[in-house]
Image (tube, rainbow, N blue to C red; front, side, top):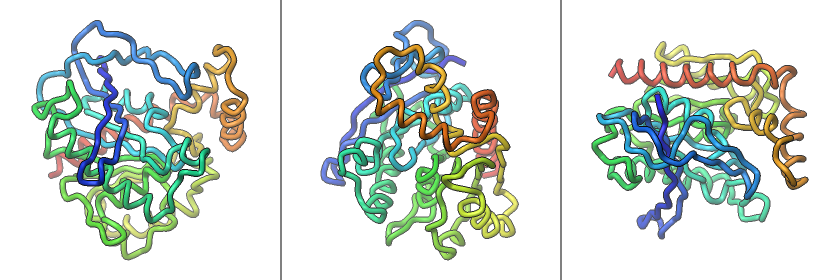
Length: 307
C-alpha cells in the first residue's frame, strides 16, 4: 500500500499556545506527489522510497496510532517504522516533545522529568484531539476511526504510552486509548501502583541486546507485574535488538558514507550508538524492524477486534 505523508505545525491554545511540529503518515491509493525527504539535520537525510507528499488519504476510517519519541529523540527518526505502520492501514502521527528533543538537550533547554511527563501527556491528548478534528490536512475527521485509538513509543516514548493510559502526577489518562505499545521502553521509574492501573492490552517489544533499557531493569519488572493479571498483554523479545531497534539509526549508518560533508557531531553521535548495539545489528536490523512493525500492527488490530 502506498503511504502519504505531511508535516504540519499545530498550537495548543489550552497550554499557552504550545507549538508542536507534527509528522503524519497514512494509507493512500493515489499516485504522484513529490517524494518525501527526511532530514536529521540540514543536508543530512534521505529520500523515502515509500512515502509521497500530501496525497489524498485512502477513503474510509482508519485506526490511529500516536507515536512518541524517546528522550533526546525527534519526531522524524522513526520514519521506517511509521511508514510501515501506515502501509498496514493506520494513520500515524508523531510530534516532537519540546523540552525533551535532541536540540533541547544540546542547548540546555531540556526540562525535568515531572515537567516532561506532564507535557508528554498533554501532547498525546492534543495530537488525538487535533487528528480527530481534521487539523492535519489532508487527513479529515472522516478518515479516522475514533473507536480505534492507540499510543506507542520508544524508550521514554514507551513510558509515555503507558502513562497516556494510566495518568501520572495528578493528571488522568485518556479513556479513548484502546491499547498501548512500548518499544525498548523505559519503565524503571514507574511505581507499582501505577502499573496496577493498566487495564488495556499492552505490548512490550524488548531488545535482548539493549544496554540502555536492559530487560532486567525495564521489561522484566513491569512484565512480572502485569502479565499474571491479564492474558491480553504480549511481550516479544528481539534477539538482535539493541536500544535503537525501532529507529532509523541503522539506516543512517548505511547511508552515511554517501552523504558529503557530514558534521563530525553527527558521525560521533551515530558511532556512539553503534558501539552500544548488539553484534550483527547491521545485518539483522531490517528483519528486527519488520518484526516490530508487524507485531504492533497485529497487536492493535487484535486489541481493537476484542473491544
